[in-house]
Image (cartoon, rainbow, N blue to C red; front, top):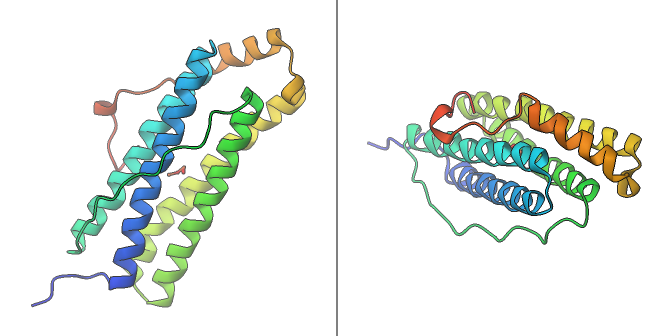
Length: 183
Ligand code: OFO
């Protein structure tokens, strides 16, 4: 009896998305480490938290594939892009990455709809909603940077923005405190 409830195409696309979420985590880890090295502790904390979130997204997909009886393939994670040139550039790259990931999530949602795999379609809606939140968050940061002068933002303004991110609710949570249901 075949217990695999995912089509080969959808299983393969979900596995690819799982690796993409791992890649996103690597990007955030890389940018967070870069920000910390530059002395931006608040930006680093914010980005480290997101690295955790992306890893949890990866786990959420992994658990779903297993739950549907399909094979999970752990693949190599591509290297993250080069370090940003500035804090403004860092937020620009974060936003561009999130938009790219949204495109990929939409493709999966469409695939599941075309296949009439309503379980996967329903599962993907969590990610559709999550991407709206993540894009909004990145856009808000970009808006703040724009007001501050973008790449020409003065050091004291960057200091204030960094302090704001440090004391905000975006403090990195320990990996053991988060769940795949509530990343
Ligand atoms: Fe996984 O949400 Fe961002 O990329």
